[in-house]
Image 1 (tube, one colour):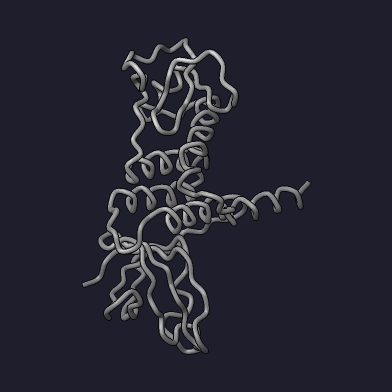
Image 2 (tube, one colour):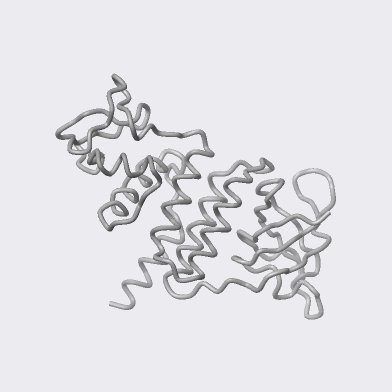
Length: 235
């Protein structure tokens, strides 16, 4: 049976094969051997590309299984310029943060929507922030944006709140690290899934970085490094 999948990462394996990290709708993230896929006459040549919705089949036992069938029902989604790095950023989040062989169908659907939005020319920050917030929920890190963590008081739009990773948000006029301070109106917008103004997008990006950092640990994201190098090269 074929299942929807995206290629997250691939690397050469032996003379003509590849190890392909896939993210599937039904089985989550795992590695497949695409035997002979780098050979000049392979029917898989050119198919196993990132940002392309595929349908695949595999077989085998253990952690490393064999890719047996690939179909490409849709055209490849082309991400050019900065959008390529945004797509690579999403791939790194999937690769590093989702446990292998664990289904995350809601994350798969959100990933597909984010890639489609990037390819369609939507403002990049919108799909990125939507995906990050849903990913945090899937990881079990659901923050309450409507009530304070210490005494469950309703968030007030005009007040400032400090973000504490282990708790949530608490009323706070100042903090040692100003990056952890958020306006109540922004938190209430997050609760509604709204990121429709530049200040909201900036606050959402700041929150995502703070909340995702414990999961990423000391990893340096390659996509961010490449993005900065490109920006510097363009002056």
